[in-house]
Amino acid sequence: MIDIKLLRENPDGVKKNAARRGKQQYVQLVEELYHTDKKWRDVKQEVDDLRHQRNFLSQEINKAKKERKNVDALLQQVKDIPVHLAEREERLALLEKQAHELLSAVPNLLHSSVPLGKDAADNKILRSWGRPKSFSYALQNHAELGEALGVADFDAGRVVAGQGFNYLLGKLAVLDLALQRYGIDFLKEEGFVPVIPPILLNRETLAGAVDLSAFEQVIYKVDQEDLYLIGTAEHALVSMLKGKILQKLPLKVCAVTPCFRKEIGGHGVDTKGLFRMHQFNKVEQVIFAKPEESFKLLEYMQKLTEKFFKSLKIPFRVIEICSGDLGAKFAKQYDIEAWFPRQGEYREVTSAGSCTDYQARRLNIRYEENSERKYVHILNNTMIATSRAMVAILENYQQKDGSVLIPDVLQKYTRFKKIEKVKE
Image (cartoon, rainbow, N blue to C red; front, side, top):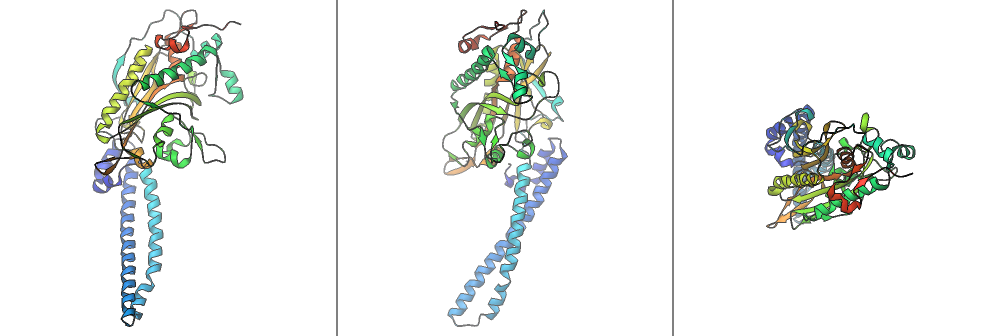
């Protein structure tokens, strides 16, 4: 959530910033929050005045009694205060709840460098790396190829769990594990601390990491339990320091976890295969930083992930997300889109973003500097979602005979150089 002081001091500035996102409901939210907060402050003043009046009269009554003076007039004045106070305290609690709900829904403040745009069509291509390879033979769909090689069983996954769940077998399963371990080793070299986090979070904690009103339809809830399966390790990693005061920044952490999401595509490669699944594995990186270092570290995280995909020798391009396509918690975000030759297009494989202090305020994560406590900035980035990376490898490294070469940097993890058809 944003700092309510910013809205009180500069409501027009906050409103203009929200308007850059191109969604009128955000502007309306800011206006409604401003007026609700104003009502709360007015009622709060009334409550404080009544409490002060009650305390003052109580002291006067005690003083008069000690001096054996008549206190009837004072008692008459104080008699109605509890009723008026109770009414206003009830009103104050209601306004506080409404203001908190509105504050949680108002989007983060956009960084001034974020390009204006309505939707994904207006996202800005910053740079590209690698030359898409030309193939003299027709490439197979990665799902059909995986089944033909005997390293995936998508039908069995649907039978036991439903669409979006799959079985990976043999060398494809090892490739998934290799990508996970390579991602973690890559980040360890950069000083990231590996973490094995919970993959279940309670509602209060999850609501601190993500806007549940927008995300609740995507995540899985455990029936009859106050627990949700994480949609990304980011949720568990940022929540790890909930309520903490940090002494040393930046703090860099990473994790590899299964992730669970209800969303799934509607056609083509999205409905069968690995590109978009209900369960997938992902290596995530999170940095807790001082505000003045936040956007420099965002560039660092982004370049780090580009270096990772360069090592896999998968062509990609870097996209800067425009204001209208930016998630509510982000102040600035980049995507990497890898080249998928069979599909003949670039598709998103990673996202790196700065949430500034938006999540930290929800989770009450601060740092101490010169005896002053301030909210940290939190950044997150997908190091690699292994399912999408495997699709890119199956397409970019596919050979004429249907076999698939393994990128050089992964071979020390897989202990093999090629995925070939499993012998019957």
